[in-house]
Length: 196
Image (tube, rainbow, N blue to C red):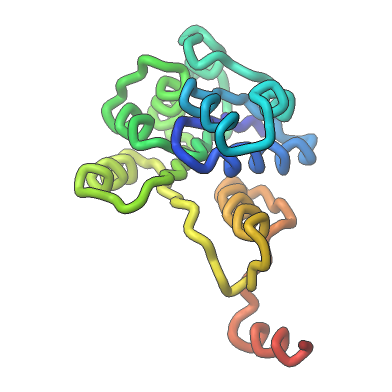
């Protein structure tokens, strides 16, 4: 399996980083990483990682300025792409096919080839323009997957919240990461509480 991971300039770069960390443990998945300039800035601002450390988590790294990269062509076969986090600028570029960067071009290729594109928008609150862009991206075939926390799994840490979202994103590609605490129904929840 080959997956493209995009990290754009929205807050929440940890989602893209954790995706790469989890996928590194899956030897059957080859990852192609693209980080925008805004993504690089946010890695420095929001995490304890350097850009180089994040890049080392990927199988292959592509410059966001390299529109001749393999992932810019539909003839290069991938199973899809996740942009996590997805800034509103990146979302706008995807919806309008404004492929002036490799990240947008790769997303455009994924859509035109009818492959799976998962966008993880990280913005709140949302105005009408943001909502319209997400709606239009969905109509084009993208899956909109905001990192909204689940609480049925009783998260104890921020890592628990991040891992659950990342695991659910990978579920969309049929990858069982082993980090999702799955809903077992009301009976399962009651049994869990009874054990305490």
